[in-house]
Length: 639
Image (cartoon, rainbow, N blue to C red):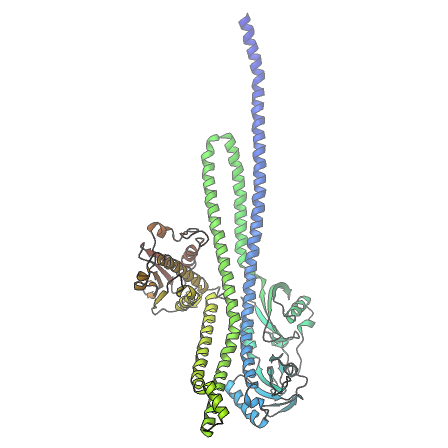
């Protein structure tokens, strides 16, 4: 009886406790699901916010870079016009300081200026204006120029490129370049020398300034009046003066014209004729004019479409990934043995993160090279103007000094017995030595200015910021410009010996490529070669370096069978081990100490040669015997 009662009690209690246990685990499972769901939602929001922020940052940086290219294109047109005006100013200023013009003898000045007009072949006419505003030009006309801008400004000492006007003699639009004629005494000029030049050169530069379909450029003078524009109806004629852009009905264009007249530099997005366009404008240095380039919005922002598409795809993948992750969490709660699947996904995420880090490093490196190119172009531009001025005046200085020496010789022949005072002075000055050394001095100065101009040209060619598209270029020119940039590391210093450059250039045709990016490959390979030679020099004796000098050999040839241009760069440095040789093109791989290398140079070079040009880059090296890089670029693009 007792046993039967116990069994009944157990049955009743089991029925009561089983639902309790089931409800307990169901409640626990739901709580864990809710916690996991909250974690996934928070993670989703964090990832989405990070992705959107990163997208906006990358988009902003890319758009700024694209806008900077348009502004740089405008600056290049401005540079062309400024350089042309600077040369014309120098020519007029030189003539204004000549002995013939300073004599103010009209009987001698007029034929002299007529001959200079024929010699220079740039000026329509030249004229001499006296302080009372009376002007006599090479056509024989007598005019009063008291109201002319060039006369007013030159009479206060300026060398001027005045606003273009309709010439009273030529009856055509021309630019008046003028310079004050120095007086024998006092500070006020003795007169003004003026030269009229056609505006064709400005029109030519403006007409060639464009960036894609639908773009065009124009130039405004100091009053906001167009002096060069694709629509010739906006340019003034003798019968009808041109309307200033400051008085146009379009308020946005008026605002831009006001900023151009105020000599500001910027790029803005405005709506012109019902179409959104970017307007990049920059002032000239040699005249009170400004140049503007109008580019349709789609021309600049078209590269962003690929970024938007990528962001959409990544967003979709992110949503799909989050849904999949949630499903996996549910399955993980139900089936514990799916842990292996999650482990595989973690590895994939790690691989994706590594790829993103590589892409980020590449973007940083590309931005640094773009900044370097802009810096190089800016330095070259700043050096170019004074170098051109010195070079242009050295010929005249040489001519003047030779004339003075000839005059001294004539004095010696005419008056062989000078006074004691002149004889003593001539002995103190050592006239014979001066007569012999002065031409040599002028020749060395001319050689120096030519060298400066060559360096400036190499810097500008190396930067190649305007060459975003493929074009046919001279590979040898790119190599020589790169060597010019690295010349400071090739010459001997107290701590490092000289590195000899051996060139064996073949007969290469022009190669279709991205010139600026290929220069980046050359500079990365050559800098690695220089680093290897400097490291090798630290381990060699002076006698060994003297007998076996550091060398970098550059050899080019054409592979006619495969239609490739082959560039080989060899150095007799420390060489590479097999392990280093296998990883030399990997991202973030470097053998240099911390702070001296990021491991990006050769990886970027590999991407430019292989991905951008469908070429081949190979390395052959033996430890202690040097390294040879072989670059193969198709003569004609395969893309």
